[in-house]
Image 1 (spheres, helix red, strand yellow):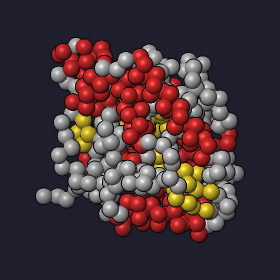
Image 2 (tube, rainbow, N blue to C red):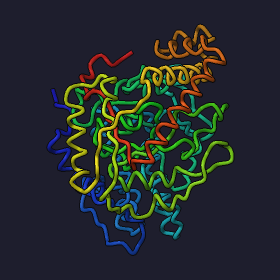
Image 3 (spheres, helix red, strand yellow):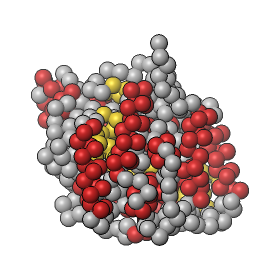
Length: 441
């Protein structure tokens, strides 16, 4: 039997070394014709470029959009069967036609943005006009939205070519990426291990160089957990930084946010500059100076004050080795002149968990109630969704208000913490990636 394609750790790190250095140095490199000439000599070198350098190469004419699309689709053909990160992949010939149209635009000096000609797959929770959006649920396996999410509109405006979607858990619930529509996404370092979630498809698509950058979303670690499991960067923005929606309710939803992922800090920041900013259709969205994210990222961290919260004095069960690994990484900051201190917070972690659980039950019960109320549809919902909805149905108005008041207290404590520290550090996951066997429904 032919061995499936796999990137072992040694080759993975070798393949990623060039782009990884950008994350260390903080270089951003806005694409323009005045930058140093970038000339990848092979398809492998092309997909190894950082997204910022790929943008520069396209703008300079060093590579065509057709060449870029050919390289990435070839990579998907080789590796996606093993990793199952990209789903709802559009037809090859249609994507090549769109890449040619992007080249034609360049020939007419119609350069439409830093993602001009980029192959991009949107997380399968965000609506994408004309592309199947399943939410990982059999209830939506045939849904083709007629409208994009706000940030997807912005990706298209920057001239990204949407090639399909990235895999996610059913309704995005769960910290591992598997669902009954598309199956299980596997870890980029070792396909026998899990990929994390819920942005697991996005993280693995990045890590295996099937995508230049990726978008994801995060309610309770869904941009950060899979990024850690696959050695990429996931950034959860502040509430409203990236407009979430549009949806039928846009005031109470304050727990899950859309955000960028990249293989370098600069790539991640550049994508944030595309996704972020106010939109009048989303009332809680924020005005943003996006040029700051697209500019240089160099900084001197000497004297930076880092508060290390660890496992909250043992409250969070953590697999042996996780905290040691984090402390080892924090030592790098200390070697650059930062000051890292272990900090304990005088706040009940049990109350914090109950606060989160109440608000999450409340939100998901509202979103999924109509599906739950239909017995035929409820039969196709995974038990975790039903548990969330039924937890929400037991809540009263005062329950939700008390949880919001407790959240306010927690916010005030963190706000005070930032009077003394610049950065708060926590593990991105409580366990290491584990055996993927059994992750199915």
